[in-house]
Image (tube, rainbow, N blue to C red; front, side, top):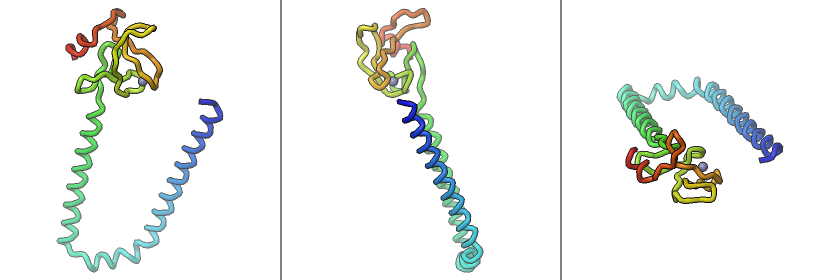
Length: 141
Ligand SMILES: [Zn+2]
């Protein structure tokens, strides 16, 4: 990426953040202006039963969101073994960009897994630099 493209990308990011921040301030201000007129009307028509139902619904939804966030963050966990990331199903992932990689083969640069986006071959080696067979790595996971 050229220097100019990097600057353009950063400016676009900052512009989007600025627009989002301005909209948030505008919405809070609008809610602050409208609230005194609307809140008494809402209080007049809602009973304590309805408020309690809303509270319980809100608590249940929050609990569900916390569970979903917890399990979706757990899914992306990788384990590093012999220089390669492995997921829970023992599939190899690129150690640089974490996308699934396959096709362990002999390349001109040596044996390993090839990651197309990174354009690199990642060797499967132990700490001494000795090549490890993929079957052995999978069996040790
Ligand atoms: Zn990669």
